[in-house]
Image (cartoon, rainbow, N blue to C red):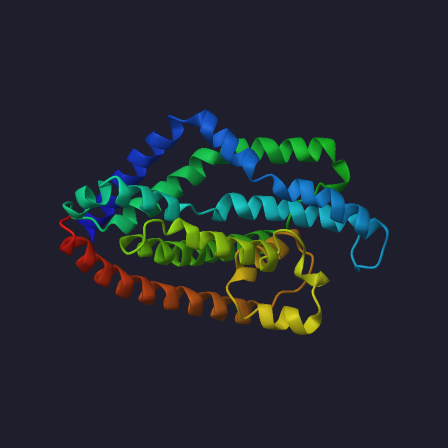
Length: 263
């Protein structure tokens, strides 16, 4: 256990230094996730005109929460793994006594810490330009949002890393993420709150992993609606378990094929 902790600490330190070396790129990544502010303008006007059951200020706070959650849960491991397979770096990683998955986890966690100052600056600018949306979440709401944002990151990472392993069979596994990203945008609450969905559709979508990537933690953070915490936790943990098990199965089979190809 101590050896594993030392290795993880070393990976976190190394990847944090790597991430901070490219501060300009981090600023661009933070700005690239500013889509919620663009969508907020359209939904704000629609909410002000009535018919959706929430006010413009509630919409603004929701999309601000969406921005925060996306900063905490963004995952890109499928593209990184693709490159590592194509350029032969994966073969080098396999010679070291650390599962490559921990490298990608360390890179993602380090990037979160390095990105934090830029994200905070964007949030401060938002509050400055739009004072009515200023709010401070209750401590309980903030804690629950952080817990479910952590679950969302674990779920999204497990799902995307499982898809990434198909790079051991296909030329570009990242093409699979294109289809998943469409479902992610539509069903996660990234482009519209799930409250605008018909009740039956929303009830069905809540059994898929997508609403837990954004909508659940964003709603908890903004304090807009009551969320069934028991169902949300069970569904999240169930999907995480499924993808972790599937990931290990695909990893073992893919590794045999990778070795058979001369790696």
